[in-house]
Image (cartoon, one colour):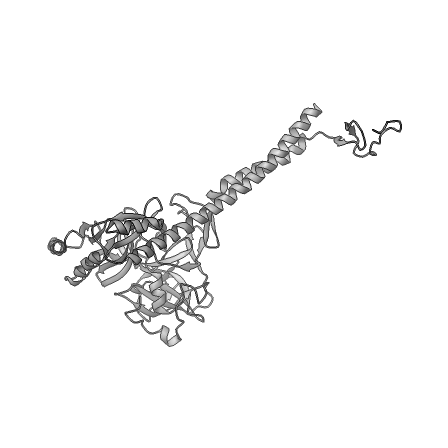
Length: 468
């Protein structure tokens, strides 16, 4: 029985140690896999955009990230396709180049403005997609179709079932006497803290509060640009409020914002707002134009993420990177819809501020303005939800390491393996035979094994044992 227990103890101990090592390796590989997947996607997308720019408007028509995570460049000839493939990026030969698509957009802009319409270049379909909401009349729709027909096959027309509106009503809420918006990102000019939010939320001089009754003041709008663009800067006047470089995403969770970037078509993104909380979707187009009832806004990010009244100004981000602030759209978070975002880099540059927690030399930094400059409007020429970083059905705890979002789901197999193995090692202590251990006798020519009492003296060879 003792021999059997000794063998069981050895097997359990060795197996437990091997399991702990295997679990640690599994966890390390999960972290490395998430990190490389997140970083590689961004790197490949930027490489594709660079290739499209290098080919020029006459040989390329944009780039995007496909549903399988691979970047694609639209090209107009076989030689350009070969260049793209040699660079390690997928190529798709299309009919219209970017110059033709941009010309179609220019024609739409020159036509009489129809409130309730929007358009953008969709590189994946190689079309300029024109959307018309439910407020567009039959005669206006007919007029828009006539413009599209004169342009040619570059344009496709679609109708939506609801209307395009700004989402006034952070993701924390901020209130005026007339409206509610969401905080976008905390920013600074190097000395003073501000809130970056949507321009349509309120003009210069608008006072903002934490509560609907106006008892706790947040600050006042220093500058606002809407329509045309859709950004504003709110100066903190309540120094007791937190100005951290994080975004609230609900359920007591926050995501640390480590920098900013330009969005990529096909990219998975997250939006947080004070009305509907956290939602996810993908970027469907860039440089979109929207004809709101209040006026036209250009250069927007178009997505299929939903939003509702009160979500305006809230953050659009991915993997801890700021991308935009909520402008407006159509639909809701029950039936879905289209939402447009002001690109954050254009706003940071125009306002001369940077994200809190980023260095002045970072990509998100601008030239720090004086207090007087910050209060002046910028030139028109300047421009139980899922956890961010995981697919929309991966709810749970996550944390960020060096800009990489690590989810508990990715670590779970390794942690379970290591934990179970530790339990086996602890259990082995009760299987270990008590009162004796095995030790090799010194100097024994037979090199035999004997039992000995661990509390007694070390056995010595007998005096008459011959030495060979």
